[in-house]
Length: 130
Image (cartoon, rainbow, N blue to C red; front, side, top):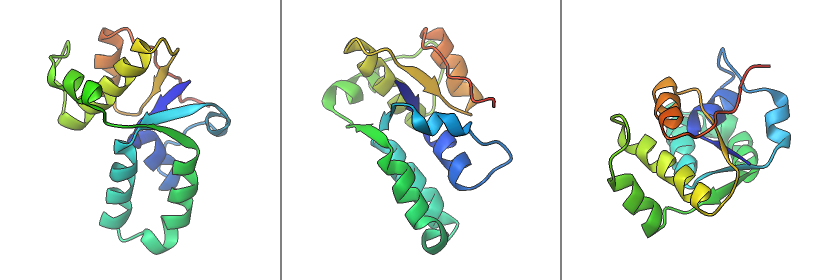
């Protein structure tokens, strides 16, 4: 199972210089419900709702969502091995929650800082190279 953060979804949607491999979308994907808000926030901020809305809905539909439960939120309040931004703490707490459920999960992200903290938490990283 691959946990995808918003950087991966937005790279796919916005056709950035970097894009995840096509094969990623055939895998079992999961993310915090938070990604839905992050993606739509960026789509609306760029006024791309009309042109990218359907693609955003379709892409988000491919991802199973983990709710921001009290357990996840409590973990996000605890320290991490390095300082993290609030949203990154929520993503990493979601991955920790999934691992506590004994799910084999790796993280797909373009955010180098989050990737570095994930490594310190022994979270395996998914390669995004084609």
